[in-house]
Amino acid sequence: MTAPLDPGPAGDLVVHPAEDADASDVGLVGRVAAGDREALRDLYGRYGQMLLGQIRFVVGDRGLSEEVLQDTMAAVWRGAGSFRGEASVRSWLIGIARRQARDRIRRHRLVTVDDAVLVDRPGGAPGPEQVTLGRLEVGVVAEVIAGLGVAHREVLALVCASGLSMREVAEVLGIPAGTVGSRLSAARAALRASLEQRGYRR
Amino acid sequence: MNSAAAHVSVEELASGSLTTAAREHLHVCAACRQDAHEWSATRDAVNLMIAELHPPEGMIDELLAYADRESCGDRGGRRPTSRLLRLGRERWSRLVATVAALLLVAGGVGYGISARGGSSGASAIRPALTMMTGCSGLESVTGSLQGIEGTTLLIRVTAGRTVRVSTGPATHTYVQQPGTLTSIVIGDPVIVSGSYSDGSLRAADVGQLTSAPAASSSADAAKVLRQGQALGTVEDLAAGRFTVREPDGTRVAVSTSTATRVVATVPVDPAQLQLGARTAAVGTFGPDGTMVSTVLDQQASPLRLVGPPGAPIGGGGGGPPVGAQRSRSPLAGLGCDPATVATIALIMPA
Image (cartoon, rainbow over all chains, first blue to last red; front, side, top):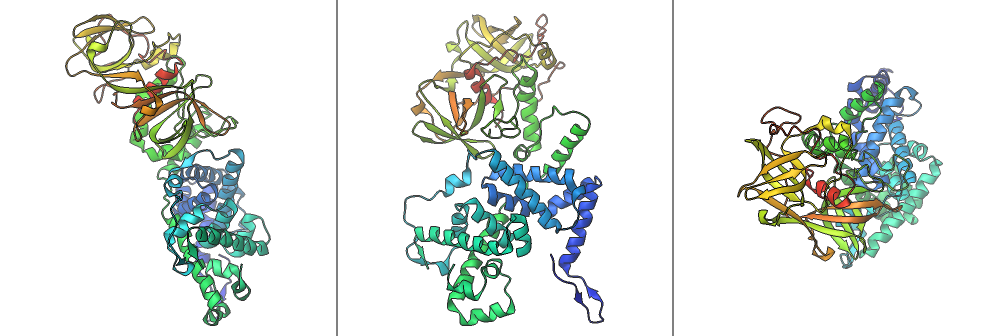
């Protein structure tokens, strides 16, 4: 996203593919600002899943996540003209999605139970015996992540799956860059504690 | 986090973007390798969770359509919700065309689909697909009964959301189950679905309700004249026929046959409710989002609300019997009886 421009063999500037994408994204947002509906569809096609994932990690509930995604795209449609290019489009979109998600959580206490939560709710049976954390099954980790607190889920999603740099993650979260690390550590500790409760050990 | 963090930053480990120095360090630091492995599993899990999500198709089209309506000054339209989109256009259209649209204008009953929770500032979030009945303090959810925890039911609504419904001494519980024509008596409140033939409504389904529909004074109801259905009380009962007197006084001749299905709404004990069966709850949402139910109704035998496919709406094709031109929808005057609301909620297409 923010990779520097490398001098090419002949001294020409070589633009990283990521920067190509950035330029394309900026153009797309500009078209959205001009009322181009296809551009909005393209933006949704390009970032819809990633945004839905980020939102899901914040609000937890599947149906509500889709509503927040819709709110996010509505905000993009209305507010594309305010995009100044100071951040990457990806970061800008995630910031909007996060505000929408947080706002939704603030306004309404989540009161419904998601199907997945019911299905995945840990039972009373003991977890796998003495399985080391080094042999973690992805599915198990996913289950445990879903049970973490919002702040922990959010930072994990941003760092592991948003494509943002650490600086951008810090900006999205509105915290100093150094705090991202401590929040990650806390998330990891919570994850580990939950895994150990299931019988996994380091 | 641990000693490894001092060797390779947690940011590097978490993101997987390791510098050359960090990679070299992993060769000599077992604890760091362990940490890196755990973070790798975490990243895989996060990405797996996201990969399994699919943004709803058609969301943008609905969004733009809504924006168009707004720009035209039409702010009365429902805001689209992704969950509704997920139901599919065909299903949504059918739902709206068959029941919701009728009820929106009929007798002031004003059904709709809750577009989003708490849009009016209510403290509780209403799950999507909650029906707002237009009756003060009366809402409805319909779905599959997933569990019973003491006096609380878990109802999974069509959209895949599970709603908690509390029950109490004031909760009336019913089951819609197969009945017989002989069980119908004069004065029974019924809803009849079928098709017109030889001047009468040939009943495919007869649903016995728990209370008579209320009279309606809504002139708008005339706009939703719909053939193939009648709602009212039974009069002039005889073998193979009876008359339905609708709330506005219209009398509809109904013929029955051995093919006519009868669905009776009978009171049961809540313990008799079956897990997995389609269930409607009518009541009010408390501040914690749990519905405090007035009525529970479960569908043991599906009652079909609409007549044969393609049954016309508002005239044409096998019209109502001569002399029985109805001035309003048979659903007009449904009123705010919770049991009737629950019955209709169950009838609505899943």
